[in-house]
Every structure is written in C-alpha cells, then in structure tokens.
Amino acid sequence: MKSVSKLIMLIALGATALTSLAGTVSAQESYAVTKYEYNREGGETTNGLTFGLTGRYDSGFSYDLNLLSSDTTGVGTLGADVELGYRFGGIAGPVAVYETRNTGGVDAYQFLLGVEGGTSLAGFDVFGKALADVDTADTYRLSVGTGYALSQALTLSGELTHFANEVSPKMNLLEVGARYNLTGNLHADLGAHYGREHGGAEKTGVSVGLGFSF
Image (tube, rainbow, N blue to C red):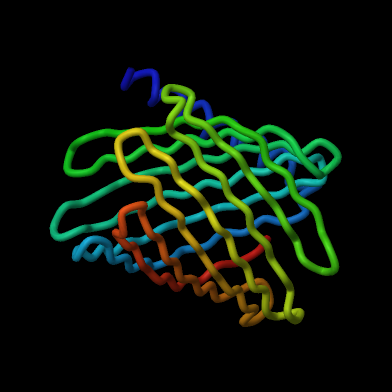
C-alpha cells in the first residue's frame, strides 16, 4: 500500500507540473507563496514552513500544491498536498486531493475524491467542496468559503470546513486570511484559524508569508 500511495503522489505531482507548463498561456491566476505557521493544539505548539503553488486556468483546470515542514515539541513532520480540479463551464466539476505525511519516521496518507463549485455574487467569490476518502467511507470533508477584493491591493478570504475522520473526533475549522499587494507582483499573506473538535478540544494558529503572482 505504501508503494501504491507513493506512485499516486508521483503521478499527481507529474500531472500538476506538466499541465501547468502546458497551460501557462491561458492562466487566469498563478501564485507562489512561502509561509511561516504557528499552531497550538492540546497544549502543544507547532512551528512550520509551507511552500504553496496555485494555478487557475481559463480551461477550467486548477491545481494546488503544498510542501511543508514542521516541528511539534521536537517531533518533525514532512508532507505534501496535491489538489487537482476541473470545473465545467468554470462553475462546477470533479476534484481530487492527495495528502501525505511523515511524522517521526511514520508514514500516513489520504486520497480523497469529490466535487467542487463556485461563482461570483455581488463582488464576492463563493465556493463549496465535498470530499470523501476512497478507502474509508466515514472520512469526509465539507467546506464553504468566500473571497472579496476590498480594494485593488487588499483581498480578504474566509473558509469553514467540517472534518469527519474515522480515527479522530469530528472538527469544524474556520480560516480567515488577507492578501495585500506590496509592490508589483509581490504580496504579503496573513492568516488565522480556529478549530474545535466535537468534545471541546481546540486548535488555533496564525500564519504570515510572502508570495508573488505570475
């Protein structure tokens, strides 16, 4: 199973790279960002770095790639997330997510499939997504979110996600963010999140990063 998961990840990464190179001419939006993240959960703190690459295309294809490294009380984690989607008519379509983590030498992964959709209403970009784990029916995610350009330089965003996992309590996670254009294609990214598990455990965090559009 481990070799299969690695193969799926390599295929997804390859597809992301090839499609992004082939589709750069018709790209609506491409963005790269490096962020420092601080999280606190159950009395433990996590410090991490994440590199993210996002692409949106006129054809309806989109991708999100994240590479991360973090430390929680001396225990290190390395990971990668790949999300590939396609919206028919730019409105709705299928989406696939692959996530892999290595924490203290132990590998774990998730492969989820689902649907996503979005549109613009009164200046707000709104979207929703439903994902289910291909191996475990009791593991799924439901999310809704929005983005709004407050000015040419400042864009605000928010997203609410419900996580259901077979091996852990269900959780609701609220994320808010702001992206500010510093100069040219250079942007500052700020974010914060608050999560609460069924049963009361809380998860909080903030992030700050620099990114550029291309």
